[in-house]
Amino acid sequence: MRVRNIINQLFRRGSQQLTAAKCTPSLTELYRQEDLETLDAHLSTTTTTTTNNNNLDLDLDERVSTHVLQQTVQILAQLQSNRGCDHQLSVQDSLVGENSGDGLFLHKGTRQPGNVVALYPGTAVYHEELAFFGGVHHMFQEEEMDWFIHRADGVLIDGLGKTHALNAIGGGGALGSSDGGDVEGGALAEVMEKLTRLQKHGTLCAQEPRAIPFASAHKANHPPKGVPANVVAVAIDYDFNAMDANLFPYIPIRHAILPNVLCEHGIAFVASRVIEAGDEIYLDYATSEESRPVWYKEAARVRGEGGGGTGTAQ
Image 1: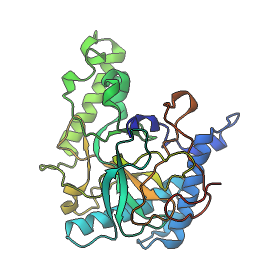
Image 2: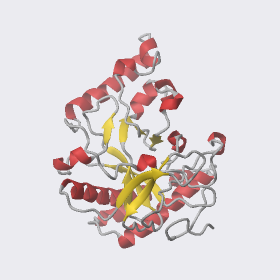
Image 3: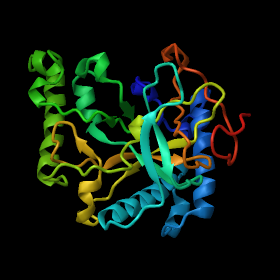
């Protein structure tokens, strides 16, 4: 299904809104908080990764992200060493209908709540570039934004993996029309400093990323009416200094302007319910009411662990 850019609120920190004075959290933020709490409960009791006791001192988002990152690195290590993985994915015609196109399915194995299911691939644009070039609508045409997903820290990941020359971005936007003013000059300096630092100190990958069988999260659809989602998107941050360099070719995120530089900011889809072989992978796009396309149907909500397939809505 197209219009992946509708999930631009996916990684807003619900906890910040919940504690803010005179601020009523939106339904989307409450759902996000509920999903993270459910994942945290499963991860803290069933994870087989090495858990640092300091994780208990982290806030909810960081704690979930830490567990998910540990699992992700283990999956990359299994791929690198040609060891078999516990599950396989496939891309087939979606069961959603309404001209939904491709869908992502669990082809083999079972994923329990808290298990990493898929990684989101593509190229990343950092918040400095987005801010300088006037936002995504100045940098991209509407039809180029179908597989965008945004993180709360301002990183945008394009599932189509587009790359961009610095002097061509914006199509007459801020860079092309700059008059050398202090504000634009300062913003340009910040962007160039970031890119120079990445080019000099970033983690380079001279070869193209491997065809990673789990880097297909961008194919996951929003569930049809009455069906709950079975995965939650979790932001993860790779620690390249602590990782085995042999795993770098298996990381599916590059910088959009410097495609030979790995992006440390990724996204993993984690099972929120039991997913059986043959089930389609569904992510709640959680769009705001003012931005919902005509095909959008509110995803059903299921508290606690559900079964495979459609489960029971509540």
